[in-house]
Image (tube, rainbow, N blue to C red; front, side, top):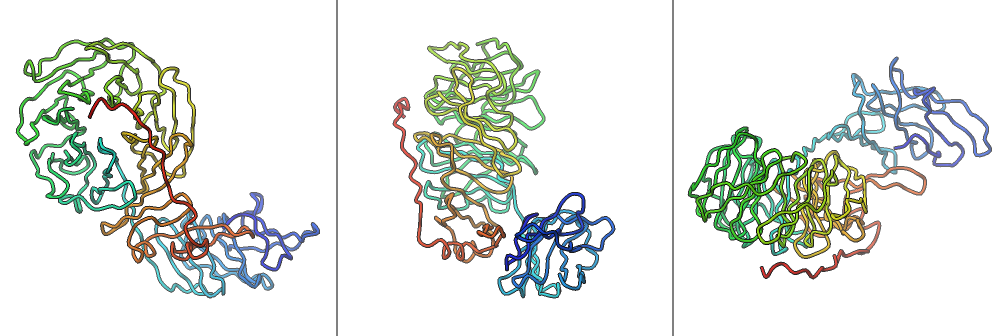
Length: 476
């Protein structure tokens, strides 16, 4: 619902202004001012949204200290839901026959009859999607959130990773072979697990960890202990090999080939490897202090240091390519070629040129917070995950989404194109859990199930086909 609506018969245009927030003002098509309609009796109430009944005889409203009200336009009689003083009503809608009114307030859906008697209600819980990452082959990606980790295909099919059901699987890293994972849980009692995608994961440590990285060879995995300046190195079989202790918090990442581990403490870059029992060697001095994230390009030519620098790596030596904060505040990743950086700033997305630092594309998306971003290993697309349990695939050339994945309760998932077409998912579950909002030609907001929406728009109007990008991946 909006602040401006024509009545269904077209004899009035109604609107709410800030001077009279408790009333709907009315003007005829000829511009003549009509009597206003009061929509709340609360002393401190304000209407944010309103809408007409199909016959134009009633006005429904919601807003501050007003969950929902119904006013008879002729008599001025107001009916309000008793005891409702919640200021944050999000949406409401009236059925076409005027017999049902649906309101959505902070995740709770309520259906009322025409006298505002409660007919039914349901609460839908949403879990954050903390992180997402493609495997090196580009065939699958994993999303992790509050209730489980899910394995997705590029066509939108999703399955829950065995052993993660009901667990806060918030951190993970792919084995270079693409068929197994290292995974941890940041927001509960911790634990580090290794395993493949068919047999499930085995816990190898009960400690709490903050970040994970596989070596390029797949022989080692390293993880930082939560709230400690320590790194623990494990074999691919789960045996602990080494503990590295530092004076400050370490940022770290394995190079994409071999077993070279890069660690950054403050402005100093170190390297180590199993060749000399993981002894640290000074490698480079930065001009800017780093954040806690290091990211290698897929070909191993570039090292992105969040909030600090972009370095080139050649024959065992580092050199500065660019300095400055083109890198995003919350999540960053390099394109396969190393020519572009995608970075997130709260709910803003930026694409930048690595050589110049110039922002080439920027977009604000309708989500509370972008948690993670990951570039596809051989296509011009990247994936973001958000606080509202969604995952979005972006066409890097067009800088537009081409499909969106939603993690639903009960270990269910759905993939939707930007046009609203359902690509995959259990139709019965999808219709129960998702609601589409559409705006009519008359400016009204309607609420439809996905099936009703597809019936309305007809057959498929868009099938996403991201363009392939042929890159030299170093022979992997």
